[in-house]
Length: 302
Image (cartoon, rainbow, N blue to C red; front, top):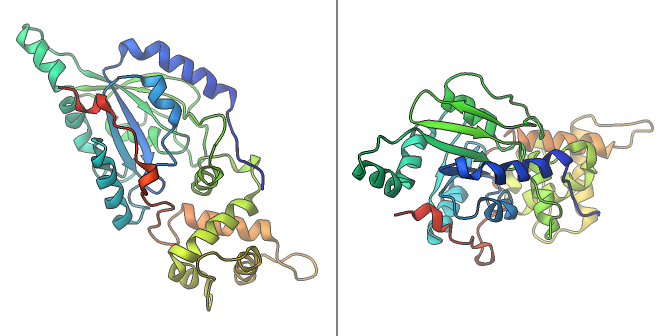
């Protein structure tokens, strides 16, 4: 199976534009997908943002396994990183963001007050990989529709300043992936949640990896959703996973001429259900010692 890579030209421009705007930014708000917190952390971002203060948000927490999300919050905390669960669609947790941003900048704000200066609105940069919910979050913070949203990556193509009406001004940026995934599993996880354009993928490969993980981590969800008697356990063989895909395809009527299963259609059924929460609240990775994030010194300013 081919290694997943995707780095459109507008992402290269976005990286350069972010670096050019850094002097105008007080804090970076980094959105991660709560279902894949480590896989959705762009390793380029730390280099791009350098020492800017950081607020990390675990978005789409409503789609993630709550027990696993709590593990991730604790995991980030061990590295001195505050990770906040939010759901930008419903607004859960969003109201706390302006105050959390000011808290991260408290040393700078207090220094301005001591000098008799009246602190201006906090200027925040919104960063994250494609389809992580940046535009939805911005619209929620602004209280109006100011940023284009969509259920596919690549909706945001430029940068724009957005006033929220309070003590926070936002700079939206296009989602940035990195040129190559050193761990192909990262690419498959991101593809499974829809952060990579389906048109450049073999959806059967993505669904294969998703089903293999779900069979081990959430077998009951698969059996209930697709009315299956059983699914293979850990370390399932490829032919076992193909058998599951074929059984799902037959249950969902994904048949082609001759009565065989159209695996591409069956794969899209699984991926749509996974992305839409039809399989329940699912996380596709758990914290492990080797995934320990680097401490973000900027989040502990002051």
